[in-house]
Length: 261
Image (cartoon, rainbow, N blue to C red; front, side):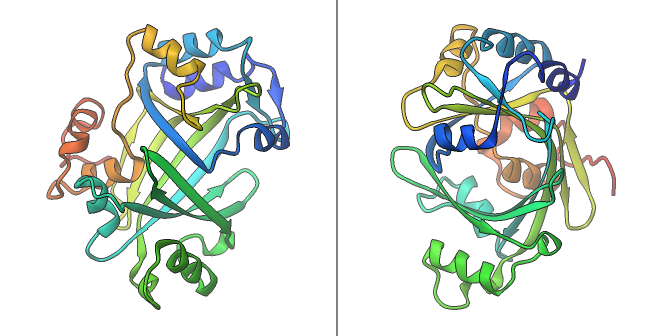
């Protein structure tokens, strides 16, 4: 059983809930995130343990959705290096496309206080998801307090695709996203993938949620991983990547290998 099998096999363990239910209980654009890499078996056990407290997002009969994210960075890789070097004012700019519905958003993520993540987003034309239009550049400049025209330097750098299932605790407002079948592709067409782990990310307004506590009791601890950073590091071995060394070593093998060229 691989990660995608585990997610597909867990889709109907929990009762479903609608997108309005999720947004009302757990929109959480300012939040504390914790990430875990689970074997397919550990993920299946986690979902079974949450069946009484959590619901699974369901839209149009689907419970696992296809995502595509395009990340933008400067020629000097300011976004990547900000994360690699632990800078206080690190940021990410990406378009996120929900491939099943062809909806697209432009998102800016910034580091807030107390290890919080602040995410702001606007609608973006799906056919323009690999570029930033004038409205998008203006949005990015305002959110990152860039000087006029500063977003002009941003260019597409990495594309990620995966399937996501979202679980929600409607009582506490916490949620967790469960990603499988991750593929990371650079602008030159080189790609790497991870099919042996489900990336689970818990999102809460502060205190740890039930899923965190369950995972801790089972010996799992949060890991340092960013899809963008790990993808860039795996495909570009010359980049500094000490912060993600363990994940790269254990799940992506040699940084110089690629699935395709």
